[in-house]
Length: 612
Image 1 (cartoon, rainbow, N blue to C red):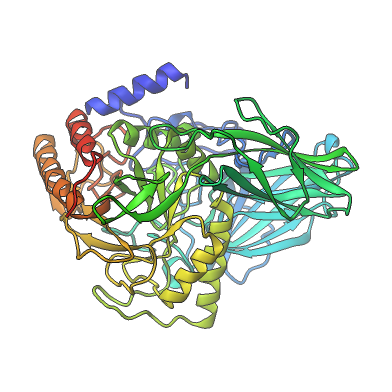
Image 2: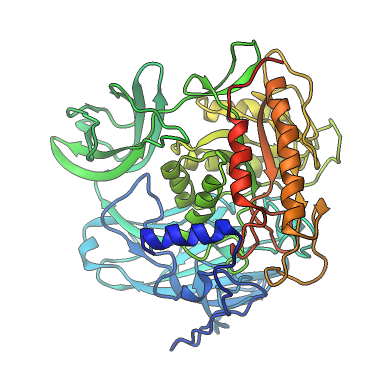
């Protein structure tokens, strides 16, 4: 889509007029695949084909020139959970869309007593000869085993964190290779993190997601040594960025060398040792903010005796997040040493055609662009983790992000101050996945808050988990528990009020935020997942009624900012399945309120606040 087309599309969306009504696609292929006919489509649905499904490089903060995208048509089969590799396959599935989605072409459920299998063949490019070969899965939900040419390559449990397998000894360059996956997913029948997935979706609970739901790709890396990951920590006060390159197989003579990739950042050949923190000065830094999302693009080179071994492209931003007292002695959220009221929606990240997976990269970006147009500066990503490119778009566009941990296990109940007691297995899995999620996302400047627990759901050992989160990333804030069960830990006290808004007593050490409020509903005919059983916290019949009620909430919110409220999260970005309290319809065709009035109302929230 051209820049002009994007601007026109967003402009039409903001007027509240439908862009068009998409018909369900019917794209038959020689392999017998066609899109499923779901209850609702988006304007991207019909454009998705096996040849163009998410072709963008999936990891923008660590890019290599050589890579091969494995998205497209795979064989699939659904078997009993105890069954071995099937001899007969059920048909074709379009990766990276989950098996329950219309875009997968399958639209079948996988029960807790079943297993989902994948298979595809690919040829390792001859140009990869003499290098190590890595196989990457952006995310697979939930319990995964991978075989390459009949040899087990690895196992993984976790539905939201990336999988990387070294398959060098199993697949030779210039020859065909077969990859087979086995996936088990108990959905709400297990204690694993699963977010809003439910075997029997209804109300605030949505369709289950099983299997591959993010991009699959292979890439070659040098056989001697290569860069596994980067850790990037900006230090605004000292004018430096701290970068650590995790290198596998680094020799004693190896070094990391930085160079700038355009722009006005001058690195002058700064270098250091692999696996050690390197301080890179950033003179007269342009600070990243929602109004000015300045990114610095650099090249990171692993050298051995001055010979380059491995090169990755990355970027960073200079920005600082903290809780501090303003001029009136009230704790606020400070961005780059200045108080900034943060306001935006609860964002579920679901799609009617792809469920967990957006139909296209431009669709991912479009949601963020619309929220920016509405005058919002923050998104709370709710009990889901997005593909890396979603955070990349937030980095580029200047959107602050509060990142939830996907919930799982049982709930101790509304208003309960008691943590649950998890089994040792459940606790270990939670900590393992939370650690991997933070590690995989920590370089994105857009993320300013980690949220380990939501409304007591799966909440356990709250002080210890808060400390673990701070330890994993001391550079960001921690919202220990959004809503209900506060233990006095973390950087903020987070309350939920429906419809609200509301505020609680100010504290000496923490800022006070409104983690959820609103939830005003409007079912829009012809833009619904289903015609019946639509649900909202409060429902309205017309767009004008909904707009008036929303503006009334914002008018009540403004005085709370002066009283000490540091941030607020409105429920929510879009309708999701039977839930109709979105700012936007589920098919992304219409903003359900008067956008110009919302823009004006939101501007007032960011004006300097007086003291309580």
